[in-house]
Image 1 (cartoon, helix red, strand yellow):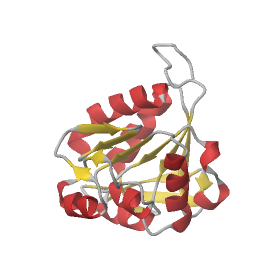
Image 2: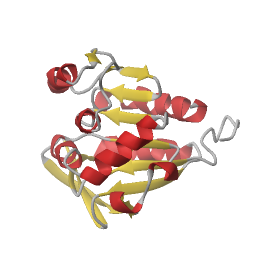
Image 3: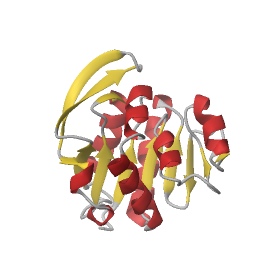
Length: 186
C-alpha cells in the first residue's frame, strides 16, 4: 500500500459484500466509494452473479448494482480488506451464505482488516469472529453479539484488532474515515 496522503489504499484490493436484495444502499455505496476514492481496487462480492438490489431505510427499494465476483469464485488471499454493509434483509441473507461467511472467517483468521456496519455483524457471528472482541452494531443486535461472546458498546465506531464496526448510517462518515485509516495500516 502507498504512503500517499491522497491515495492511502493505492495497491490494495477491497471486497464489498452485496446481498441479492436488501443491502442498505447508503452503507454499501458510501463505504465502497470511500475506499475506491482512497485508491483501492474494489470488487463487489455476492452469492450469485448479476445484480444486487439495495434498499433505503430497510423497506424502500432503491438501485441495483453489478456483482463483480461471487463468493465461491474468490479466496481470502484475493483481498487486503473486506466490507460488510448492513440492511436487515441483506445482512440476514449474507449470514446464510456459507461461501460468504467462510470468506469472512478466513479473512479475519488471516489477520486482515474488515469494516462491518449496522446489521452486518450478524455475518461476523456466523463466521465465529465475535468472541473476545469489543464491537458495536445496530442496537437490536447487542444481545446476539453478547451471546456470541463479544463486548457490545454503543459507540459511533469501534476498532478491535483490525475489525472496524459502526452502528448505523448516521455513523458513516466516521466509519469510512476509520476503515481507510485501518485498511492503510493493517
